[in-house]
Image (tube, rainbow, N blue to C red; front, side, top):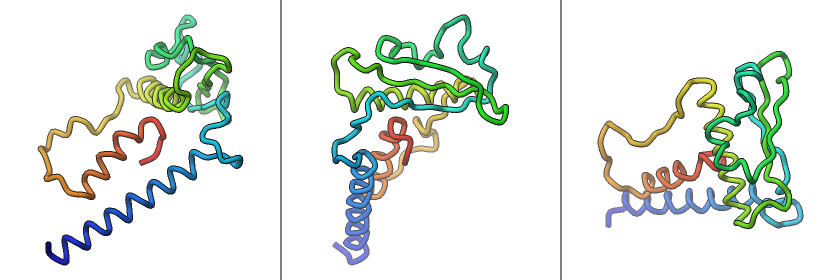
Length: 154
């Protein structure tokens, strides 16, 4: 193994460890338990009037699959900038892993915003430019890209 390859592996390992530490800190509250505030409202601002966000009482398509688990509300965004779409996991909702439900809710809100504003959901998959060789840094970026829709960070 060359010195350059060894240095790249060490750098990738250090970056992965740093990402794990930051992710852990972000998902832990002051009491030390992950996501303890399960009934917290998650909000996105959509650049559309309220009548176009909730049409005839129907939720945006990405939120429909979670309809039995969530509460949804809308309000005018400050500064006349559209509509705030807020959702939260109902306290005492059906059984399931809370961490997964919060991630699903965040991803659904993000997809709803994209669909309502642009008509499509932006994605980096599939990548039509071809395949790149698997490298430690590339594997790390791929893993983070798969996780980012739920956490909202890359």
